[in-house]
Image 1 (cartoon, helix red, strand yellow):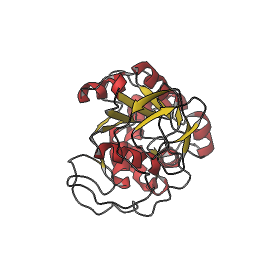
Image 2: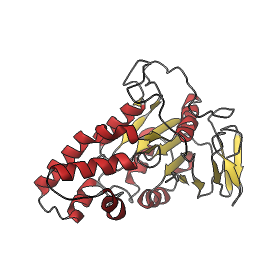
Image 3: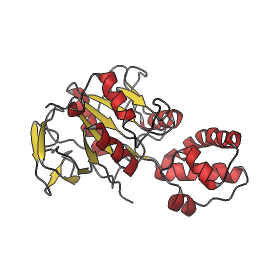
Length: 278
């Protein structure tokens, strides 16, 4: 069946925001008189939703947790110079959209955090921004070392000709999903790609369409507050499919975290694991 919809996690999948998130939390807590190191956050709390992290850290007062959450959102953009776009994956998605496919961000993160980071990267929700000038810090970012589309973990494969035509993955074989030299072990099975032809070139300049950001657009965003049950429940992915009128068989998910992968599996869609360089 033809893939019509791509669903992307944001943090750790479309963008490497690990250091920015860590530094923002450390700064927020230190400002409030708490002691938290980068190493402690990375070892004990990284990947948790804000409220869960603050609760486990020992902040029992809900009002204090909410105050700290809002302060973290405010401080987060100060560390965007450390955020890196997963350029090979994004180029694949951009070509997929150009051929009529739909692309959504589906994340458990704060909508405000996602919006701020996407604005920095020059990516918008389709139709919400016009213009062709990249935001400060967008141009010239170092995208080296970002792994393309990760590992095939379900019955879906891709061929090695950029994003061209119909691909059939062979279990255990390395396949290039972007044409940019980032390989991923494929899984058995096949699907018909709809993202055009040719090899994507990471970092290549292009002219945005009217209503798009300088680095392109997604078709929608679902954040942690948009569904009752967040990942590892599949609700967020299923809701995005519902809004686009797509079935799990028409959907491909890219994820990096264990809870995100569990949600992807439970959604019934095919999915790929994204691994970012450390």
